[in-house]
Image 1 (tube, rainbow, N blue to C red):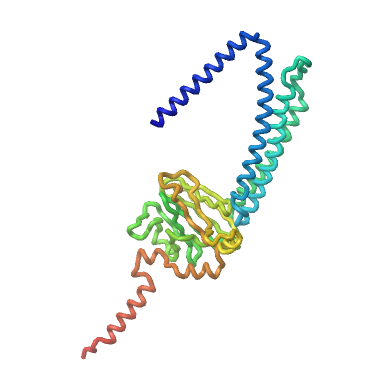
Image 2 (image 1 turned 135 degrees about the horizontal axis):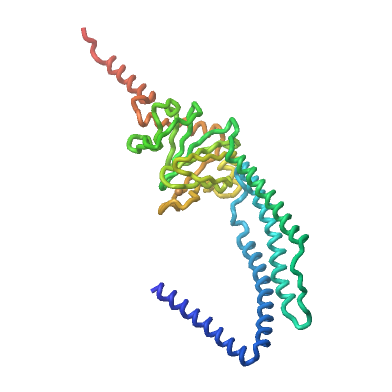
Length: 351
Ligand SMILES: [Cu+2]
């Protein structure tokens, strides 16, 4: 039914345009070609001017309407730089946009065809060509240069004291891994991925660096305020993207090719809640690549907290290794050994 209506509306629209075109053709014949053309020209010139004015009012209106709807101040050090770059770009392109659009439409109106003047033939001016080629080229080069500078900084080597968190995307969830006490993420191999055997990331258990790695999924990622964090980003199936809008960071998660980025969170979750007056506020991870039917639900959350709070949280976690090999877990072995001893003590001593 809907398709029928769309086709019918399109058909009617075509008919109307066709009829108008035909009617104006007859009018032109009746009135005389020349006169009709001049009149159309006048109408066009006026409509161009109207378009400029209505368009500019529209731009202003949209701005007013959407004020305050964008994200607040950035919550990371790199985000501050990104925001500044964005505002400079918007300001520069905004000024150029206004000047060029006003000139385009105003000149079309002002210099419309008139019997009172003859057009001046001005085909070429090298100097002008140079000016409007070289100046934008320089400005754009500087802007791209800044972009590249920040890009290399954010994807480059993280500071020595940075904490590491591995984040792995899959349809449709995020999994996090912390390197544990040794501060080294153990080696992985995708063929070892086995959810049933407590190895969802394919950690190679023969690598001792894996034995203290903490695996977290289905809950918040925890980060420490004012401490640089390097994210090591992976994907298990298709391309995902770690989008951290509050920190103004994002990076693709590509299967088989780990990507990295680093930043320093500068506000804790609690500080943000106070600042935004929103007790429900959480930092979000959104998947920024269309990755399948559940893409919209690939939302992760991040808690930014003090070092003490982070340490407390970390202390409550058990390395994945002990889930895969419970017999190696000291916390599990000790009570077991204790109860064996107790039973042995209670047993009547054989003679
Ligand atoms: Cu995704």
